[in-house]
Image (tube, rainbow, N blue to C red; front, side, top):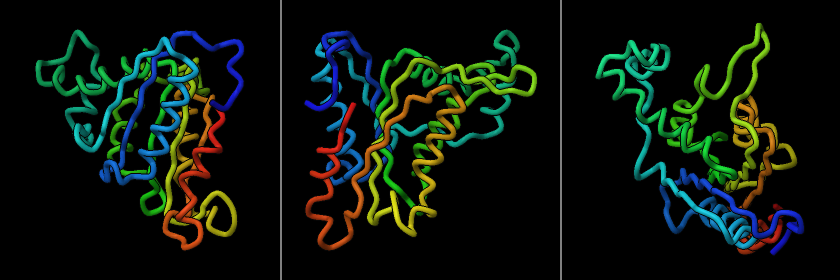
Length: 210
């Protein structure tokens, strides 16, 4: 096990693991995400783990009913709006209850999969996960540790392709806006590059530091 857990070992932890790749067992982001979860489990034997595969149980893309429900006071919602807000309320409650969040994020066309973006659309709600104090935004999802398991066919953490990486930068920005600023990103990259693909996953797992 890597990392220093002298002060936190044996403390209870609630872990939320989000999968967004449709490739299942073949997914490098899933494999890296599971390795991060395993490290957390080893460091916190008294833990609970909730795993959501966003590709098999996807959140609906936002429609008018969802937006209306978000901005309608609870006591004024119609039965249809109560149903429309259910996914969002449940996702936010689950997020708030977690101590650590592991997000598997394969890079698709320089960004995140639509399944993960839809989950974000349901949790990013004014008055619930962020608010404005005057003109200053304040994130309301605090005291969370977030771990990103990012996979990519090429190398985007450095070099000229770094400018095309909107995966890590977007996740850090939107999660940080909601108050989740304690973020560590781990990458399995070059999985389509000869000479790198054979060792990419092992290299990524060895780099995990909680």
